[in-house]
Length: 157
Image 1 (spheres, rainbow, N blue to C red):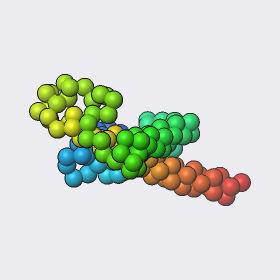
Image 2 (cartoon, rainbow, N blue to C red; image 1 turned 90 degrees about the vertical axis):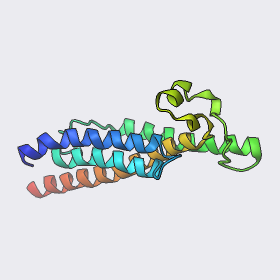
Image 3 (tube, helix red, strand yellow; image 1 turned 30 degrees about the vertical axis):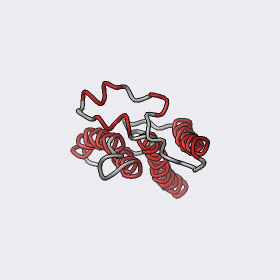
Image 4 (cartoon, rainbow, N blue to C red; image 1 turned 180 degrees about the vertical axis):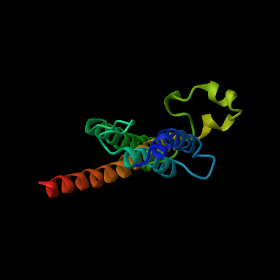
């Protein structure tokens, strides 16, 4: 890849990752959410991986990091579903309250965002879905890039 593309790729990837985080965090009141935000974050990571290559990318992603992100996303989804199941009898039932008071009240005052504390499990659900989509899309592209590298190595021998 060209030097100009390498100079542009990392800052653009950081902007994409930040925009994906913003999409996930505001997903319960705006169009978007976990899937769209996870896809945007994955596109930032994939952009760096394609331009720099898997081994030389400034965004280092190890197999254990991807596995731990996927585990957090899957377990979080199950726990959110069970929280609704145990309180109302329905899997993923929206409780309508700040679950375990994790969202600090300063968020609602800093961003003039009073509905942040009354969205129930939707912000948490957007977060875990975003993790799953991020891991899924990134893992597929990493697998393709590494298999392409293996094929090139085998052809050179």
